[in-house]
Image (cartoon, rainbow, N blue to C red; front, side, top):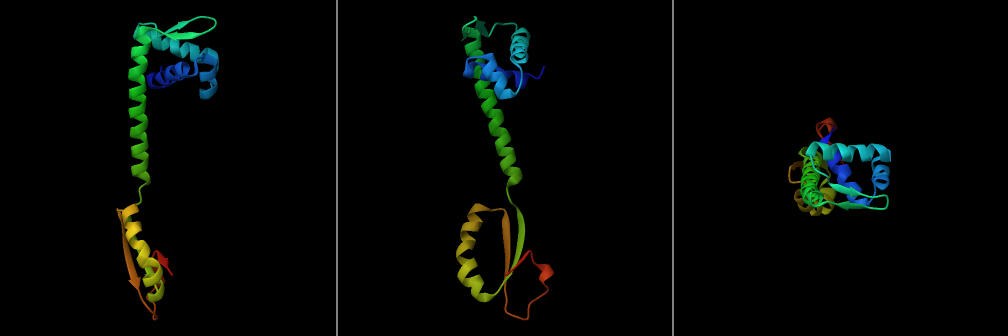
Length: 142
C-alpha cells in the first residue's frame, strides 16, 4: 500500500464527504477508495471514519490523524513546488550583440528588472557598430 496515496485519498474522502466523490477525483472506483481507506485504518489499527449509509463522520482518532495528514501533505506539496521552481529557475550566461542605439534606448532600461527577476543569469552584452564580430559567438544578435 502506498501510504502517501492513501493519506491523500483519506483527506479527499473527508473533504468531499463521500467515497464516490473522492474516487472520481482520483479516477478510481469507489470500491478501490473504500478498500484503500480500510487498509489505512487496518495499518494504523484504528477506525478513522464512522460510516453509515447516509454519511461519514470522523472519529476522534480520525480528526487527530486528519490534522497531521493535512500538515504532512501540505509540507510535501510545498517541497515539490520549491524543487520544481528551483529546477525551472534560469541560470547561466546570455551573450548579446546589439547596435548602440538599440542597446542604449531599449535594452538598458530593461536590464535592472531582468537582473531582479533572474539573479542567476549573467548578461554579457556587447554594443558594437559594424564591423560585426562573428555572430556564432552570441546567443542573441539584434
